[in-house]
Length: 360
Image 1: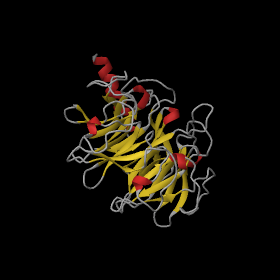
Image 2: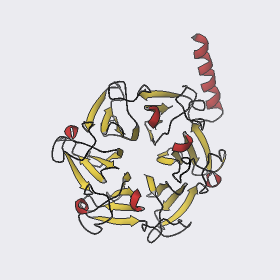
Image 3: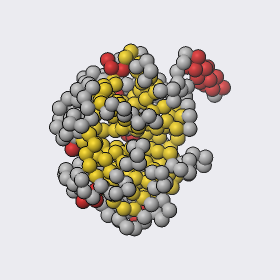
Image 4: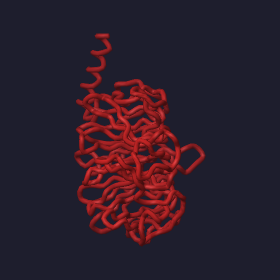
């Protein structure tokens, strides 16, 4: 045991000396077996840190939102009764039925918003009362409602949400190949980006009138720049807040797992075999002008230095598996869907390993 501890410490020191951003990976929640208990999580996806400092996360296969106290490691239920469906608005969130919640966030008031893929809605939990309601979508897939109340509009498999600097909610309406904007003050929804067409996004093109094929997930920078992964496009884009133009940041558009230690523009992201579903399904901005990417189908977490443009792998081997820990570059993952940099560490939703891991 002493030898293992010594070797682990020696490896961590070597990693830090070599300039690696993280030296160890450990499991924060889950035991690798899907379920619903104090020891189990079931296909974790989107994560966020709440106003109380706890980690909140989506469980796609449990159809629930749970809270992890980062001091006590106690798990508590926030929303979802475990039954797949679309019921419960106007009542306690813990009694409501959810359907494949993908991502979540808190607004400035401390209320929680949830993107539910298979209910085709965005729901809100009033954290003071615990009551759940729908703020966008009708529960029926489609495309309608721009310019009117979001509760009467249709979405198609919303995947990702971010709060823009003006307080509006941006929604990756992936099935409609659009980003929609929900004005939380008025309840009005509109199309912000994308045309509904499945065509390439030209580099330097304006946000208005430019196609987006499968906008999957977003991250918003402090200066207003929006980072976007296109699921079917195998690429990442940056929307320049000043010029309102799209710029390719990473990915060649080809499926693969390559390019580490080179320019992210020349890198490839993994794709599901026989499909055009690309690997990038989670983004999070980190310190020192970096962007972390969940390269889902490559079973890896990658880091892009936004100053130099260099991409590297910080967790995973490129092969599917579950561990071993603590060496990040020897720890296999299983289709990780989300990353979150907070508290000086990187949280990873290792979805089909049924774990939430943390890189330090």
